[in-house]
Image (cartoon, rainbow, N blue to C red; front, top):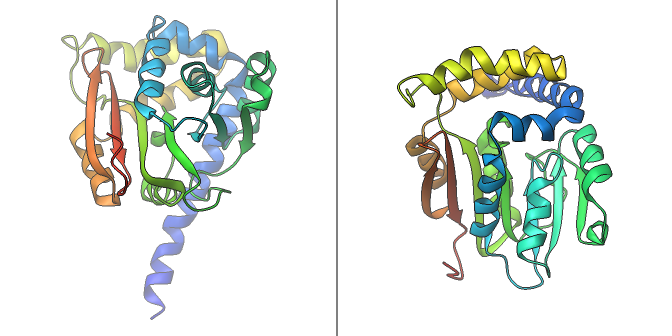
Length: 252
């Protein structure tokens, strides 16, 4: 009976070590995060986040969980599109939330957006308390993803939507390999020049390359228990939006 526990401990240890490294890495680049997002995507990330928030469809006056909220760009967009909702902005890295709070939580937003440092695998929230969950470029950084899926399902109300914005797999050639060249060669260099941290943007390129393709990620969501799962490509499949619902009231 002890063998499964012995086998699981090294895996759990690897996941915890991964989490600490990710937390430290984003803490180092928090100051430059917004600028580099806009610069490296040529401003397209603003539109991608708009599409993500639009897909959430929370109830009037409801609560939305913005998971891996970072500097809270998605949280702000959710509030812009749905002025009556409240947004729980949860992120594993305190420095990212602090940067977002400094630059974005003003003009009344401080009462509607609630930043909290938390682990996406152990959400400090009761069951069935949110109308929708969003996560932008964060599911890649959570291991194991299954733990995050389970927590999202737990806190979602029946019929609520889980909306994921994430890079497509970098293993597929896009724009005749131009994007792949950018990912492998240019991205780490630009990140190093601007932020002084080449390793963070090398990590970004490596995790995009290793990430599941859109069909595999959709299958993960279905296996986790989400229904009506679909995905939408953007920018020739460089980015995908995935949407799934918790079983219950049909709001689609």
